[in-house]
Structures are given as C-alpha cells and as structure tokens.
Amino acid sequence: MDSENWFRLIGGVLLFSALAISIYFRSGAERASGEQLDRSGEGKALLITLRVGGLLLWLTLIAYLINPAWMGWASYASPVWLRWLGVLTAGTGWVLTFWMFQSLGNNITDTVVTRREHHLVTTGPYRWIRHPLYTFGSLFYLGLGLIAASWLILLMACLAFFLLSLRTPKEEAQLLARFGDEYAVYMESTGRYLPKLSMLLRRSAGSPA
Image (cartoon, rainbow, N blue to C red; front, side, top):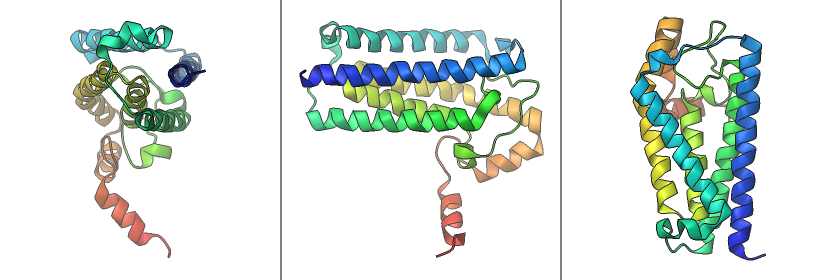
C-alpha cells in the first residue's frame, strides 16, 4: 500500500473513531438527563452557520478519504514528514478530546445552554482551560488537514474555531448566570482556550523539587 493510501486509512480511522466517541458521550448525556435543550438562546444565524460549516468540513474530509483526486484542486505539495506530523497532531487532538469528554461526563451539550443538573467541572483539562473542546477539536482537524495536505481543510478548521470563538462569550455568560461567583473565580485562574502562563508558573514554582 502506497503512502497516500496509508494516510487515507489513518485519517479515516481517526475521523470516524472520533465521531463514535462523540456520539457515545453525547447520547449518554442525553439519556442520563432526559432533557430537551432549548437552543434558541444561541442565536439562529450562528447556530445555522456552525451546523453548515461543520457539515462542509466533514464532506470535504470524506471526499478526500474516498478519492483524493476529487480534492486535488485544494491540495498543496507537502513533504511526507509534514503529513506524519499531521498524524501526530490529529492523534494528540484525539486523545485530548477523549480526556475532555471523560472529564465533562454528562454535562456535555452541543449548545451554549446548560442542563438542569449541570455542575461546574474543574478537573481534567478544565483545571487549566475553560473551553478545551474548541482547542483540542481544532488541533484534531488541523492535523487531519496536514494528513490530507489540503489547504481547504486547514482553512475550514481555522474558520470553525473562529465561529466557535464568537459564541464563547454567550456560553460564558450562561455559565456566569448559572454559577455566579464560583465561575467568576474559576475564570480568574484559567485561560479561555490555552492555560494562563501566570498560573502555570505559579503551580510550577509551588511544586516540590
């Protein structure tokens, strides 16, 4: 099997196993809560844009997996080592996303609205960042873009992160309304998408030699 087929196989395994994990955790949360969430608070325009953008990203990835020639117009010359770096990047994003789902448990939702039984999670990756799914998911899709050597997939992954960042203020407003001072204090000690350098330095300085 040539290298292109290896990259397609690895990319397909990563993509569809990530989908299976997402469905498993999200459906488990839906069953556990038995709650139908009201998504109107998110804003129809942004919600539709996110759904359509996500669908287009997936269709682009699937087109590459089925026949790379279909996406040849959006490809770029890439050295093999860079594509293997994409495998490492996507694999890291996959592992971190699984960790995030495990940490979040039944609190996971696909909207800014929280569940009735939602509790504030501050363990796992949430110890350092407030929105690890956006960070780890973006890392995952950027890795897939490197695997596919597709500037279009890389661009769409960046646009997806940008759109998600637009809804983050609404999401945090919902959490502040729900948890009040507890969430405000949590915000002070964590970064939005990346750990706060000051917190990392303090924790490093406070750790035993």
